[in-house]
Structure formats: structure tokens, C-alpha cells
Image 1 (cartoon, rainbow, N blue to C red):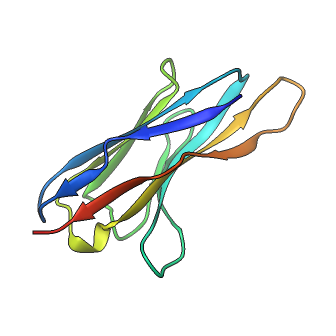
Image 2: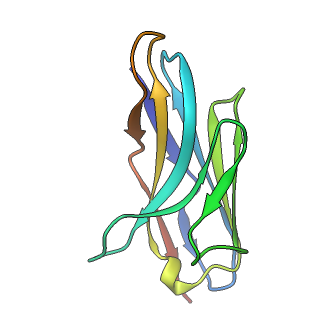
Amino acid sequence: QVQLVESGGGLVQPGGSLRLSCAASGNMSSIYAMGWYRQAPGKQRELVASITHGGTTMYADSVKGRFTISRDNAKKTVYLQMNSLKPGDTAVYYCNAAIRVTVITSPIAFWGQGTQVTVSS
């Protein structure tokens, strides 16, 4: 059974940094694009950053220049380095990955359980 397990959330002061990690486990054939989403209270879930298997990245305008997404394909892990954090970054952060479970099935989206990031003084 495929699972995405996130870690690294917590409480940080404005201007601080956090690094989120998300590791995929279980039987799978291939992992394609991976990404991070976030959802603040009362708001819709939004895409923060994504990265293809080859390393092409994309960022939401609100985090460009502050956040960096990366991945280690051998470890089946995606990271989100968050610097210069602002109170507006407070949200539950979710990992997402497009995974082909077997060679004969189409890729489907898997989600992590979410990790809370709170930016407050």
C-alpha cells in the first residue's frame, strides 16, 4: 500500500525557516511529479510548489524566492525548504505525488496526512 509520510512542520517565528520532508513508501512502479499544497483555515487548498521527476520546478507567486522544492528520487522523498516565513504562510501543508503503482496502471494522485506550519511571534 502506497503511503506518503510528511515531517518537519512546527511553530516558527516570522523570518524563520523550516524544512518539510515527504517520503513515499510501499510497492510502486514509478513516481512522477511531486508537490506541496497548503490549506489555511477558511481557505481553499492551494498549490505551493511542484517538481517533475527530472527536476523542473514551479512555484506559486507568493512563495517565489523564499521556498525551494527538491527531491531525491533514490529515496522517494520530496523536500520543501521554507525561508523568510511570514504569518501568511501558516497552514496545513500536504504532500502530493503522482504514482504509478504497477506498470500496467495509470498514475494516480496520492496525498500525505498533512503537517501543520504555524508562523507566529
